[in-house]
Length: 153
Image (cartoon, rainbow, N blue to C red; front, side):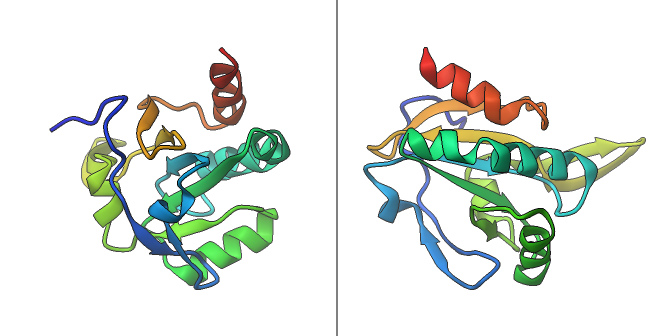
């Protein structure tokens, strides 16, 4: 099974770093940018989160919700949010259930070693709950501006 544009986005219910529950089904009527990232407080993840932070007002102006997802726990997310002033929820997918549903969890290679982990991928979900765009290769520093540009087309 491979997710593709126009597929119904897998629904989920996850807590953010502050313990608030976020349900995808509650966000119908809005466009959702759901981005998966490997780990809080790592160089690429900092760049990506800060890029979304820096473009957050533009994304909100287009009635978009930004949600970051990793397997980190609430305490880690809250520290990350506080340290970098992240204005959107970072969701705790500690058992990788949601990442797996979005095909964003699997075998990775780094410095010659193989391991299971979260892949840096992004899904734009339309107001009807369908996948609008899928980004499987992401450049962390440019990604938020790329999404804004792509959605202008």
